[in-house]
Image 1 (cartoon, rainbow, N blue to C red):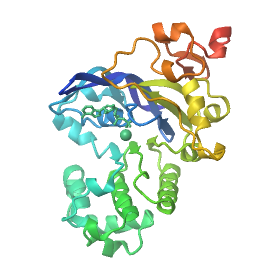
Image 2 (image 1 turned 30 degrees about the vertical axis):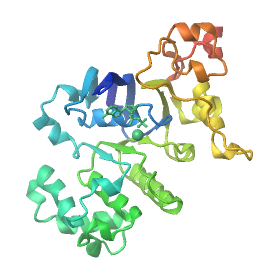
Image 3 (image 1 turned 120 degrees about the vertical axis):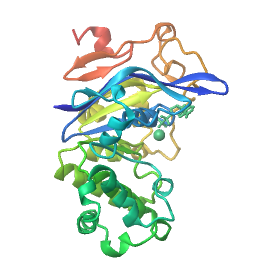
Length: 326
Ligand SMILES: Nc1ncnc2c1ncn2[C@@H]1O[C@H](COP(=O)(O)OP(=O)(O)O)[C@@H](O)[C@H]1O
Ligand SMILES: [Mg+2]
């Protein structure tokens, strides 16, 4: 059952050089108890999509141009900020990429975690210490009582990220968005955090949207995958279909760039993502795509469902060309 459904989300920003559309019509769903893996190069709109879901775009420069974000059937975009506050950090939580910048260095861990209780569980605000000690211990934080008294600057990067995860978990959210939760950490700590996210996945019924550039993590954690490029979803499928049978040339290129296929040369996809100021008429991957034909430059391919929820946005997808999906 889907708990989060994003339909045709478009987000733009006013910049000194004019208006840019960072998210250009994204559709996605997150089901209860499932991990949706989100992949795509830097700049493809993954974080902006997450921030929109969290209701954090409403500042002076960013605006939601269209779409709906349905959480348990309710459109979050129609909620007043006061109502959204009740959902954010309570029913829908986010783990950010940079724990160092998300925690206040001069306020103790305990006081920062207690803030969440003040907002969402006020009856517990003076009784939360014991619960926090247990929660931190569940998140494999040793000596959790002592950690609560520390300031973030006294903690390692891995511990700070665990505190951020604790903060996101206090209210047992139905949806957790983890935006590159391990990028800022060293390899050993990355593995520990991934283990922790797996434990959370196994023990809760939350739907998790996991953004990562690490396809190994996707293979381990996700049930379904969406591939984003230039503000759009270009492929959506099960994790098995992604690794065995990805259909979009961009997905194929991402998979070919995986370190497992390392052949002595660093592989990255040639060329660059178009910049947001460029007008792109056809497929945004056209200039980098090995399979492109003339039509790709002229018209944008529609998203087509092949089978069992495997969807792809490409004219050159063989199954679509052959009409197998019909
Ligand atoms: N506040 C902003 N103002 C202008 N452009 C922005 C802003 N935030 C993000 N963008 C642009 O939106 C695009 C998508 O960004 P983002 O969602 O952060 O990408 P990703 O998380 O996939 O790396 C990028 O081109 C980025 O430069
Ligand atoms: Mg990002």
